[in-house]
Image (tube, rainbow, N blue to C red; front, top):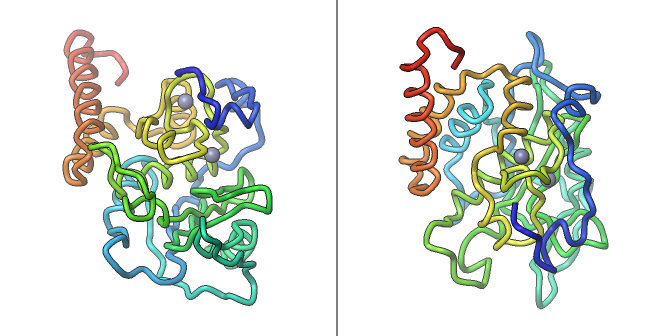
Length: 267
Ligand SMILES: [Zn+2]
Ligand SMILES: [Zn+2]
């Protein structure tokens, strides 16, 4: 991964990373016969042009993790339980993530592996934070993330040609869900599991996992790599993620070529 710039995540968060063997020996949740569904929980209003297509997110998460994903019916914001920080000239009104996580952890469905809240409201994680894209717990099987900052209007900066609100939303969805599988921030390669402090850093991250993090996820869900890449490639085409789709296509071709050479080898 490139050297972090002064405002990038690793300049302000000194993280050692997590090797594959550290991941294996860590206490972590993994899907099993009972807890096997990822629930997406819309929170608050989802209206206007920036509202994400929920069914696309569901299919994306299902292909990414190889686990059944269900969208729950939208829940109203219980304002008396969630701390709000009033809008300033620089930030809109924000909701405190830790309160949202508490609310989400109540009423976890019995078959939930994890539950990820989605909201159009901006989020903060405590008084030291300007904002966060999202936050997830490593052990409590809940997470939350926001769609408030992905549109060009909200970002206040021009977007690189390939970054769209939907691609950004898919990245944060997969990143936060990755944490709920016990995957810590990655410091080895440019990877979806890199920490991210701002939109340019998020845009620079790939949608895919590096070899270390991919192996962690494969250990957790036992997905078939070729099927996974094929499904994700189709979804990237549908979502208009041209660069990500091209990368996935190259992976599919590489695995197919390797399988043709070694027909009995694992895929
Ligand atoms: Zn993270
Ligand atoms: Zn990684």
